Image (cartoon, rainbow, N blue to C red; front, side, top):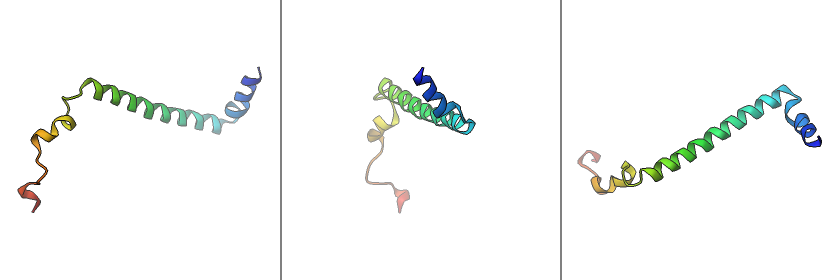
Length: 67
């Protein structure tokens, strides 16, 4: 019972704190979910993405357009 009272007094009692907690939680979840899905995607498609094969097609010396 003490835990629920503490949560109520810390988060749910004031509307501004409650809404702020929801926004911060949603933002944190979005960032974490994005990083997790990106990591899974990169692992699943390793060797097939541009960042993995770029060195085969781009030379480091530059091009004629750089002058």
